[in-house]
Image (cartoon, rainbow over all chains, first blue to last red; front, side, top):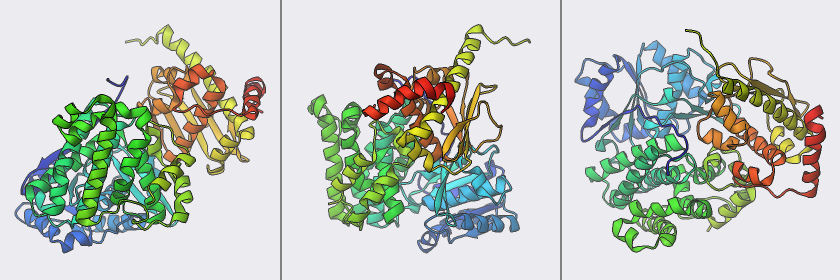
Length: 394
Length: 170
């Protein structure tokens, strides 16, 4: 059924395929850029991925204005300020963000600071606070999970005041996202599994929650099917370029889906657990996903049941009575959890993820402040959140 | 070309202006006496200002956190910390007439938010509760995801808000 009203946006050009990074100079030229700044992290450098980009730029009329390669795991205002200074002093005119969510978010933050000519990024925190088109921005993800290459969000930490500042604006959508299997070939098995489960959660939550629409549904179901078909092989055989490219595409599709229909309870639980106990986001998503689906069964069993088709295939879908499809879909997610645990030790509960039991109450309280709850089909209060946390504990 | 606003839209604007007044006064009163609203407002920075407006020319209502409570300021100051803008009068009418919950309005992009999203969500939770107080159960069940069971104290508070809170803001 169509929603009574919805909005959808995805102006990001997707460039996908083997050696797609070699198209980077052409794409930057199309955007009118001449001296891009690269924002990345040490993991990318150590894996030799920065070299892939530098090689592509070397054989072009462009020149890299500056490289910032020490982006920390949590983007912060200090780092944004430092990079903005480097951008200015090297007369850069555009951005290439290479990495996971942190490099992308940091580069987006710098882009705001540069375009708005302001050191005080907090003035632009919140929703739709940007009024000016930002500098050209090309995103090259090196994990298949966050979807930051196609989302209109950036989260930057204000370490002085100990708060995370969210920025949402369609101006934050990159101009181009380049998906090249070479950029994810070196991702270790556990990180491959965790980031894929992050993407799976983006897709499933966007399909289940209240802002779903036909466009986001199409991206979500395609992402779910692709992840389900490829994640185990990517963990077992990380050097398989086709599988890597499939997962990169799935993460991008999931990103487009959730950027337009948002996420829900699973992300609220994950954000709170990550904020308090520093559980990596993908691991938290993997742990909470089946519990989030179960919690929403009463309000959304119909749409959860529809997910059996991309998750289990047409034969299983046809053989399962409509009333049992939602439970069957959740069962497949639990089976995937077990498979990933045995293949690479991806934690299946909060205890294994290192969460002390005495922090559950605090996490439940933090869940209530998370915006994603608004989009969850079922209402959630603090007692509900604590109950799920206890169920997910061991 | 001379632009003429239809009578229907003019009536809707008057209706929304009245509901904004009722909502503003009800929130002001509830922020004094309702423990849930007080708990929400306690986490807002002191002096925080918020406005709800209909683009492009209003109507508009604003509130300010003052002495731990929310004070209704009428149309209020131009510059506020949190601005929730309905994209047009039709969007505002849906929400202010009880045809659609404020949360659903947010989900359907009927409004835009400029400012702190956490406070915006807190405000939506407050408006949800006020809707439960102001509307009969048959309507409020359509407007919020879960209608909380009201205690005897809350039923009395509901009466107080309707009879004293809205006319006086106390």
